[in-house]
Length: 221
Ligand SMILES: NC(=O)c1ccc[n+]([C@@H]2O[C@H](COP(=O)([O-])OP(=O)(O)OC[C@H]3O[C@@H](n4cnc5c(N)ncnc54)[C@H](OP(=O)(O)O)[C@@H]3O)[C@@H](O)[C@H]2O)c1
Image (cartoon, rainbow, N blue to C red; front, side, top):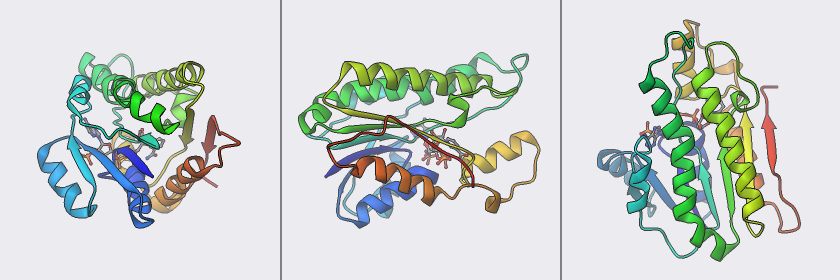
C-alpha cells in the first residue's frame, strides 16, 4: 500500500506516518522546505519525501506522485486564534491556504493516482469544523470549508472513499500553541493522545471494501 501524508513532521501526522512505515507500507511525504524534507528523510527510512509549502498551494503542482496511491491523508494544518476585530488578512489567508486550499489543490493533483487504486482520501478536520466558537473564526472557517470540500468530493468521485475525521483537542505541538494563544496552562494529559487519533485514521484506511466511514468524530474521553 502507498500513502501520501501531509503534516508528517509533527503531531497526528507524525504518529500516523510512523505506524504506516513500521507495518511496511510505502510513504510519500510532503515537507514545507528542503531542510524539513532532509529531517523527514532521516526519520522515515525509505520514504519518498518531497517539498511543497502548503501556505503556497500552487507548489503542490510540482510534486511527482506515483501512478497509484491507496490513500492521501491531509494532516497538515495551522491555527491562529483571535477575535474577528483583530485577525489580519494574513491570519485569514494563511489558515485558509494551508487548511483548505492546499488540501483541495493536492487532492486534485493526486486524483489520477487515487482513482487508479480506488483509494481513500482522509481530511483531518477538527471540532472547529462543526461549530465555530468566539476567537476561532478563521480556523473554524477553514475547517468548515474542508468539510464542504470532502462532502462535494465524495459525490464527485464515487469510486473513492472520502472520510473526514474530526478530532477534539489532541496533545500535540499545535495544542500547546493553542494554549499559549489562549493564555492557558497546558497539560498534555488532559487531551486525546495523537496515537489515538492516528489509530482512528488507520481504522478508516484499513476498513474492508464493503464499507466506508464518511465522518468520524473523536472526542477527549
Ligand atoms: N492538536 C489538536 O488539538 C487538533 C484538534 C483538531 C484538529 N487538529 C488538526 O489535526 C491536524 C494535525 O494537527 P497536529 O495537532 O498534529 O499539529 P502539529 O503538531 O502542529 O503538526 C502540523 C503539521 O502541519 C505541517 N504544516 C504546517 N504548515 C505547513 C506548510 N505551510 N507546509 C507544509 N506543512 C505544513 C507542519 O509542518 P512542520 O513539521 O514543518 O511544522 C506539521 O508537520 C491539523 O489539520 C489540525 O488542524 C488538531
